[in-house]
Length: 64
Image 1: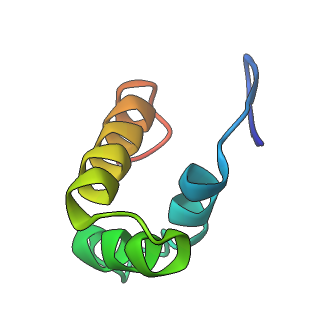
Image 2: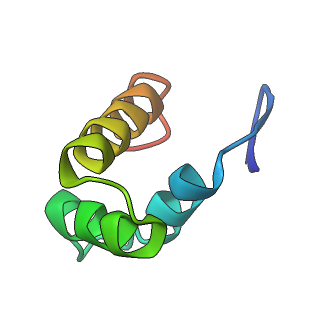
């Protein structure tokens, strides 16, 4: 769960894991690779999901 001013966003396990890895040093590709390894999903699916998550959070002003 991600608490935001408007309430809370409920995240699935892979989205929560991706956000936990955002530290200003890891690249998006490194985060995608970690999601692939941890959740045994394809690179293509993880890439699409992580990019979609980050785009949505950026539009809402939660990521830069």
